[in-house]
Amino acid sequence: MVVNGFAANLKKLRKSKNETQQQLANALGVSRCTVSKWENKYLEADYANLIAIAEHYRITIDQLLR
Image (cartoon, rainbow, N blue to C red; front, side, top):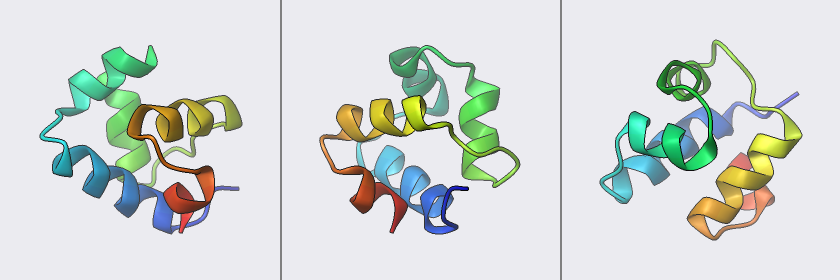
């Protein structure tokens, strides 16, 4: 289970990079709807996507989840 901070952190990171949900989705190989669901806590990211997100933003998974 992904910690609650993930959704807020993901949205904050994405916006700080002036990146749209679609741009992030394209970078990760997922749909824009998936990114939206992650940000709105309707869907939890799996481990592979957590790694991809952390690598995309050049942070650790720990930083992403807290």
